[in-house]
Image 1: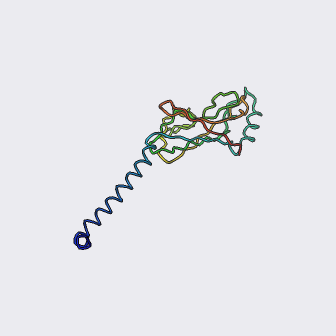
Image 2: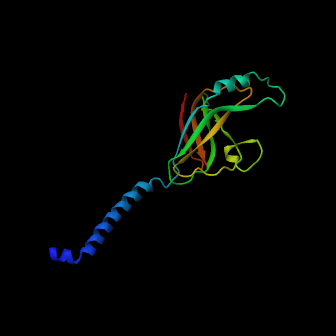
Image 3: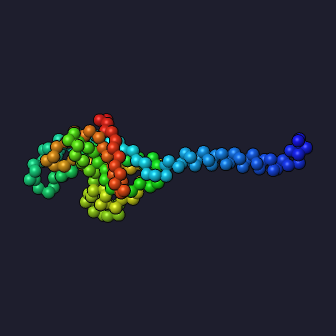
Amino acid sequence: MAHWFRDNLLAAYGAVVGTIALLLNVVRFSYDRGKDSVQLRVSARASPDLRSNASRLAAIPSESEMDAPRLLPGFQVTVYNDGLVAAHIAEVGVIDANGKDVTALVHRPKAHDLTLWPVGEAGLDAISGKSSQTFTVYLRTGEGVPTVKGCFVVDKTGKRWKGRYSES
């Protein structure tokens, strides 16, 4: 047997390396198979200047001139794509105490105006696999600060993911 092994050393080496490579590929396939779909995770937190923005909006009369701001940042919602497939987002926002959705607004990526659009209408690029993107939910004049209980994201297929809101 030792004589055969010495004569066929290259073949034995190839068989061992090939078997190890096959096992590694099987393990990698079984690990990645579950990640071939869109897998989103979402979390929200208050904007660092939430209190000052809320008091600033509260001080503006509802019939004021156009120079006053109508929207100021209130909450930041971060969408994490844990899968390997790019995720196209249709809607992002927070959920208030009454269960009402308060959606995030964004700028169009290639537009040169200052108009804010709902996420689904802005034509954003997809969130690539293993990455994240943060969206801003704005406080609106005359509406006050919503009591946030959670957050959500909806992809272009209509699937909805819910997440937690942290006060910090």
